[in-house]
Length: 66
Image (tube, rainbow, N blue to C red; front, side, top):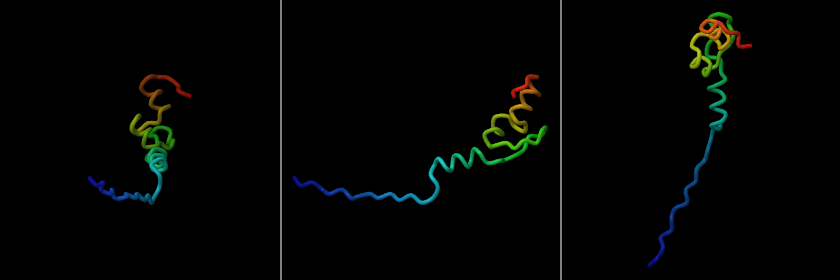
């Protein structure tokens, strides 16, 4: 019984790392708060819509965050 030689697989990566891509996507400014104009990241916009966290808490819960 002879063993068959398995081919060597080589993977090359060109471009930014997954960490760099994630950081760019989550830290880029995608909109500004409708009340105070504070820049909002994609993550903030997904969590709070058109308001930043501070304005959202003031509007819906009557609480100051900061």
